[in-house]
Amino acid sequence: MRVAIIAGLMAVGLLAGCGGAEELEPMSPEETHRVVEMAVPSACTDACDQKYYQCYFGGGDPYYCNSYRAFCISQCP
Image 1 (cartoon, rainbow, N blue to C red):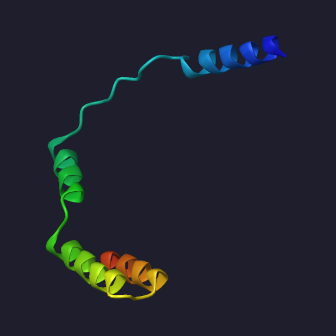
Image 2 (cartoon, rainbow, N blue to C red; image 1 turned 120 degrees about the horizontal axis):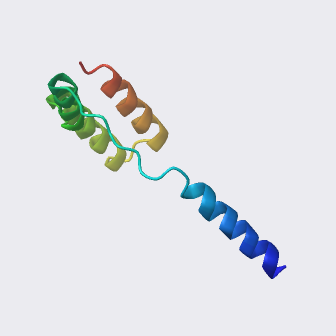
């Protein structure tokens, strides 16, 4: 029993360590700008979050509040 556990852990360790760390290729300035733009919330998403908090903490149905927030954010530019 103990041998099977040790063999399984060794197999997982060997598979996880296979290949080492992969080097990332450099991003262009346009890609960098797009990543930063997607990471920073806009005024539209802030408004959607505000409506969500009003709905959720105002006693609204959590499913409806989550669905409305997702729809609102999908309409943001």
